[in-house]
Image 1 (cartoon, rainbow, N blue to C red):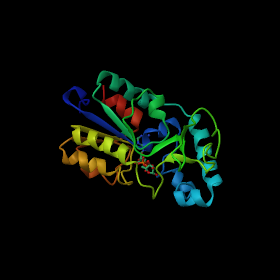
Image 2: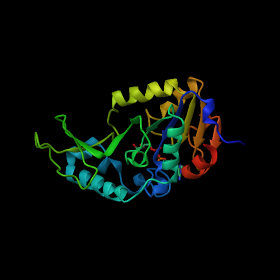
Image 3: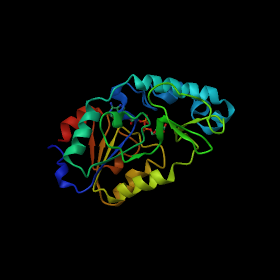
Image 4: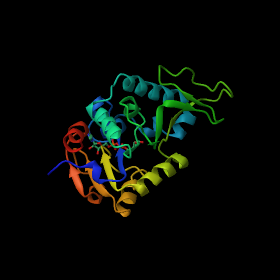
Length: 232
Ligand code: APR
C-alpha cells in the first residue's frame, strides 16, 4: 500500500494518546506496564484523593514530572513537527499531559486533559512549573493547596478546550489516531464525530482497540515507525 498523501486532504487532524509517548519512555496508562496497573487512580489522580491527602497526590505527580522531564521527544514527535511545517493545515489535539509534543516542536491545538507542567488553585491562580520541582504546594494568594492542572477521573473536562477541539474534528477530512486505546470519554467520542463528518479514518496502534471498527485503515506498529513509513 502506498504512503498517505496529505496533499489530498484539506484539514488533516491528528489525535494522540499516551502510546505516542511510549517510545520516549513515558509509561502508558493501560496495557503492559501501565500507570493504572501500578497506582489506583482513586488514591492519586482524582479530586477526592486530592481533598483527602493533597501531599500524596502532589508527590505522585511530582514523581511523574521528574521521570517525564528526563524523557525526550522521539523521532515520531519530530516527524509530526516536520509534517506540520509541510502541511500548515495539519492540526494536532492530544490527550497527553506530558508536553512531549510541544518539546518536539509540534503546535498542539488542544491539550484535552491539561498538562502536568501547570498547577491551578480554586481561587483561579494558575502557575507554570515545568523547569523544576513545584515551586510551592500552596497558593501564594489564598494559601489553599495547589492542584495539578490535569483533568482527573470524575473531573468535568475543560469545556472551552473541548469546544475548540470539537470544531477541528467537525472540520477535518482526515482523522489520524495515534496511540490511544479509545476508552476514555468524552475524548474517545472524537473518533465517532470525525466518522460522522465523513473524514477518512486511520488508526496507528500496535494493536486493535475498542474503536478500531470506526477506522478505514489500521496501521499496526509503533508511532515513530508508522509516521515515518506512511506519512511524508
Ligand atoms: N506506538 C503507538 N501506540 C502505542 C505504543 C507505541 N509505541 N505503545 C502502546 N501503544 C498504544 C496501546 O496499544 C494503547 O492502545 O497506546 C495506547 C495507550 O492507551 P492508554 O494507555 O489507555 O492511553 P490513552 O488512550 O491516551 O488514555 C486516555 O486515559 O487515564 C486517562 O487521562 C488519561 O489521557 C489519558 C486517557
